[in-house]
Amino acid sequence: MQALAPYFAAQTRHMGDFSLGFQYMWYDALKPSYAIVEDCLVLREFFAGKCYYHFPLSLAGDPSREMAAVAALEEQCRETGERIHYTNVPRERLPLMTARYAEMLITNNRRWRDYLYLADDFKTYPGKKYAGQRNHVRKFGRLYPDWKFFEASPSDMGAVDAFLHAYESTQRAKNDLLADEELDEVYEVLGRLGELNMRAGILTAGGEIVGFSAGERCGDMLVVHIEKALRGYEGVYPFLAQQFALAFCGEGVRYLNRMDDAGDLGLRKSKLQYGPCELVDKFNVTPKRAIDFIMRLPTVQTERLVLKPVADADKAAYARLAGNVERNKYWGYDWRTDRKKKPADSYFLRSAREDFSKRHEMPLGVYLSDMVVGEVVLHRFGYDARAEIGVRLLPEFEGMGYAREAVRGYTDYAFSRMNLEVVEAKCYKENTRSRAMLEAAGMRPCGEDGTFYYFYRTPEM
Image 1 (cartoon, rainbow, N blue to C red):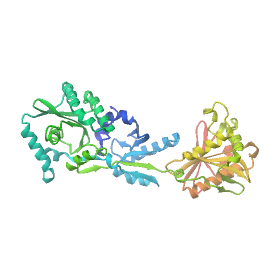
Image 2: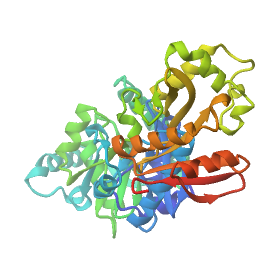
Image 3: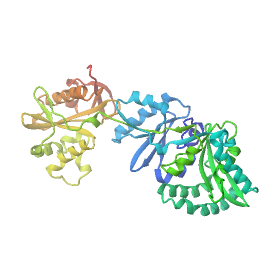
Image 4: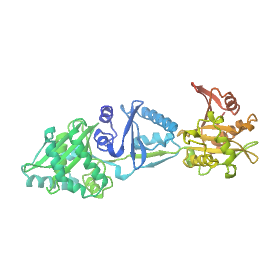
């Protein structure tokens, strides 16, 4: 909370998700974690079995830093093989995303948009559109002239807990898992209002608590995390909302964020009746990589070779290639990582096909006439039109230029048919033959570390 608080306090996106209260209340449901990258906060959460990354939030609101954090996130996901799904992308950042990604899926689910209101409207309920709220406020004041509203203190939490139990039957009657989860988290919040930077208010009538609200300042808005009232008291909700605004929307607070409606139509109707000045967009963006558009593996003809999917009839030859531990020490994967003893021949071919079906890589057999002589693979696809290439041959076919030809031919295909801009490669430093092969295939050296030499090629090379 200490790490996240400065980012939330300074945010100008008007999203309730970027608040301590939201992250704390939905911690069990969303399992959030975070990183600070390029002076930006990057939140990760899990929803409906899928991992989402919140669009980076710059402490200074700097879009260039946010896009630098996006680039770092892309590289991490490329290394781990994880697909990127962004959430809470603000509308003003969409142009940057469309400029970065050639193809992407964009959604903006209505049920998760936050309702944003002018704080001053809640203080007075002005004009014709608020006539109903004004009538409710007057009625509540007339029916319960002894009402009181005051800021809650830690000593009040026992009474608030008792009030929530009285309110609970209404909430549980919705038979909604999200509603139940939300109420469970309200109980958790009561003892941590101060740590969560929340201000809370209590409304009483006849000496009994009839309403409770709590919210958090984030930039120029107050996020209302909790608003509970006993519906048996006529006009209680408009009255509570007004008193809360009067008490806590002081200097610098221009807006009230009253969160989303989670698809509850009754709640949606109520929120709309209060006349929001904006429904805050929260775009989900799933960028596409070049491999995501490949429905079936291609066939690529070179001068002497055919690069194509390995046939069932060639599974034995493929298993000899993929299962040779000594020869594959430079490949980057050892089947013994996943198996205790060498599996049947069909295992290796099935694994290669599964890797393509999951869009992890594009493996092609290297064929000389009708014989499998090796394999060439495009993998580690990035979101910026790049991928890495690797090749391996059966021992009896080395030294004849087949690896160079396969790499060159598949790279040309990647540029012309998949619109890649960069194809990369690497080899172990002790693998001198591989280094010479990559240079002969037109790959240009671009660096090294303690383990590898690195290469790249672009369409103009």
